[in-house]
Length: 142
Image 1 (cartoon, rainbow, N blue to C red):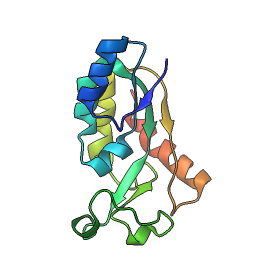
Image 2: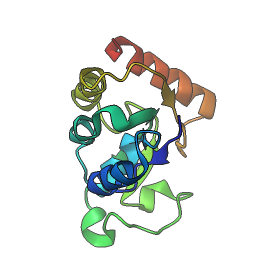
Image 3: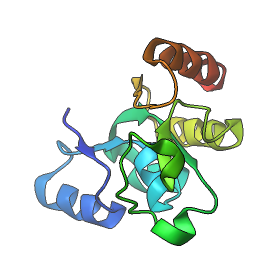
Image 4: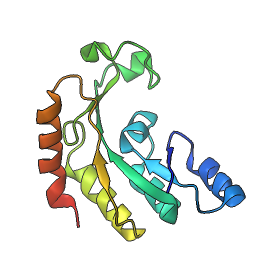
């Protein structure tokens, strides 16, 4: 099954599925929804069987920066302390209060496949980040 990164809005992907059929689906990545201020669990519930793949990556915000630079902050990812938001290791931006309902939403729509840990954390070592993410998310999986 193929996937489209869910930078498309839900209504757009659902129109595409209506035109093409269920062969097309979403690669759901909550990190992209975080910085767009979308509700990832609501997106999963709306997509249902259109969820074809899931990438787990987190986002950390710097509270004062979105008011100044917005969510489309184009400052370099190499200077994360100066950005409105930065990709982070799962659990380093949002805690179990986000991730548990997100995993529950996946289960509720019948998604029973891979959740891939995606690591673009500029602050933490890559191996340490993947290890931390796996340790964090494992107890939340069904």
